[in-house]
Length: 261
Ligand code: PEP
Image 1 (tube, rainbow, N blue to C red):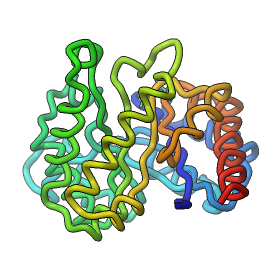
Image 2: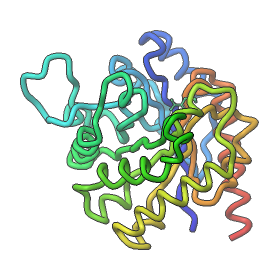
Image 3: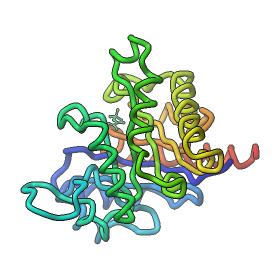
């Protein structure tokens, strides 16, 4: 089954507005338009508006890195998904750094996913186990709980359009990505959960990404894993050459997949 590939650049809390513009400028020149590969940039809230005027729209879409689940109200300091609805196509929800440093609970992640869908934004739901959970052989339970709770308020049609990123916490900011067999096991388990809840058609439509220490040299092996539709990239996305090489790698993987089909 051929789904449109997706590469998401998560710039996290890096880059000033000016630095973000410089990077966009470089990316506009370096990244090529590839049919069948969608490329998404996720700068800080502060840079979303200026960057929306600067991106080459044939090449890039924008994502928020988070968003509050209540649409408006007296919530000082928060930015709601509703406020960003005209600015972004996607929103990263439940990144492990939000779960860890901002204590986001399973229920909060569920409410954010629902708020994104309600506001016409495609959630990129991040799930993944910590090193300790992996050591305790709790990976499947953790992924089950994160996926089942986050999708609780959605219809099968909603779920067909969302994106789920498997990001093992132990592979984020590490020396190398998770081994392909670990990625394969988690991806097929997540797909199984979606199939159990929503049926085969939904499972075949939903896009799944891998995230964690993606670098150009690892792209081919990761993209060969059955059921992986793209990458969520942290550090390497701050460097236009490495990120552009990653996009090219995903494009080459898409090409070889279409030849096999
Ligand atoms: C991430 O935090 O989503 C991520 C994938 O980071 P890195 O690529 O730096 O491991």
